[in-house]
Amino acid sequence: MLYRADAQAVPAHLHPGRTLSAEEENMADHKQLIGHLAALMTIIVWGITFISTKVLLRDFTPLEILFIRFTLGWLALWLVCPRRLVLTDRRQEWLFAFAGLTGVTLYFLLENIALTYSFASNVGVIVAVAPFFTALLAFRFLDGERPRANFFLGFVVAITGIGLISFNGSTVLQLNPLGDLLAVLAALVWAVYSILTRKIGAHGYGSLQATRRIFFYGLLFMLPCLPVLGFSWDTARVLKPVNLFNLLFLGLWASALCFVTWTFSIRRLGAIKTVVYIYLVPVVTVLTSVLVLHERITWMSAMGTALTLLGLAISEMRRFRLWKSAGHMVRSGETGD
Image 1 (cartoon, helix red, strand yellow):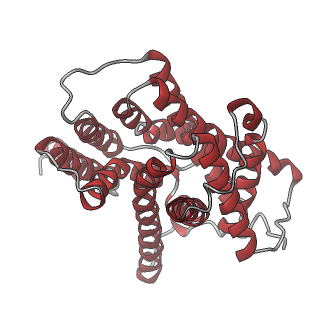
Image 2: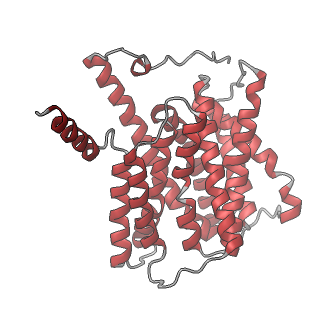
Image 3: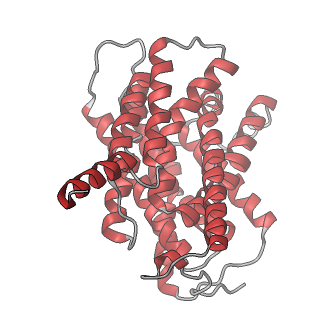
């Protein structure tokens, strides 16, 4: 099926001097709400994946889990929509290839390898700076997406909260240069992936077929790593009920469904507004650990959760009302009102 590059109409609010009608504003708000709900659902599932991965690591290596989950995801997307994606310009192929390399292969490999050299708390906090990198890249490469003051304030508040969650019970921050550097690179490549996804969406391609093509390239780039890092084709461990359940969850829900909804959210909200939901991943992980693993929640993790939610709320504000009020007071003083 051929998708036209001009399939997406330019939103009315991007036309200079154009005033939106009440009906158009309601429709825009509705689309924004759906985008936020899709991003929230995606992050809730991704927050739970840490528990599934922890269970699977008893029998599988990180690379084996990664390859199996995205193979299942790719096959599921083909079954749902077997139509071939035809590009309007063959030069756009590099967008899909680079998105697969960054969002599938490099991000997960860098994060998993970082965990072997550094503490999970360090990696959790460092990877959460992905929204900051995304904002910088969006400012440079995406027209119309510029981070505002509320984004940076929300970033500081959220990272403080994530720090409290991650270093809960630890009084000393221990740095591990190699592992921490790999975590920084993981955050950076995820930011690049978010920008590429936004660019792919701008060409009018459907989220499902675009995600399937990205998965294909991710798996393709993963193949050279299999003999180097080791991969066992033993199917007996896959057929264990607990392993099969978790692999299906990671492949069908966390990969096939959630990458589609993440791409959809980026198209609706933009890269910056969507990627800040990453702040919620450690929050979901903490809550899931309490409910499923019966772990105790401490005052530090509770405070960290509250700060993270506050940081997300600040980042998602349409306008920073405190700054707006201050500016109005200054202007009023200058005019003598």
